[in-house]
Length: 193
Image (cartoon, one colour):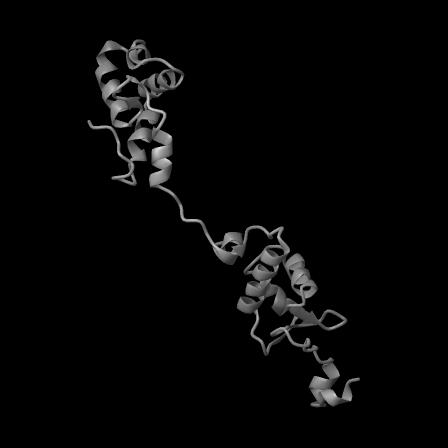
């Protein structure tokens, strides 16, 4: 079998795992990685299995054909061929749409929280605490912390008693959550001081 070429085949790591799954080839691979030559690595293997183990080690790319020793370039080649694209923007902090970690950088944290507010709450909505908690639960298990971050970053405003929340839109003046009695009676904001 020819040695693996991870640049030609992104699944080239499979023969390596197959070699490590078999006891005789795994032991020989360990000896090879610890500095033994191929002949030294397979010497303890039963004679009936030795040829197969040598084939397996070569197929896995563990043996440098020019030296007969462990091929130290194998892991870097496999990793380079299977490189995962770096996530950018707020996606760096989300896993399956949920916050995996809060950024330490204040600008990145603000960017993440702005996106969460945009996704969770429409600009014209006023939500009670259970409703806002339900929306934020889609992004974090700790909705109280997320809600507090949104309020502290002035992306979400709340009534003084904490019973209702609204998204702050744009960079202009904050829109106040109207007191309940104003909404119920239809009074205008001009009544506010």
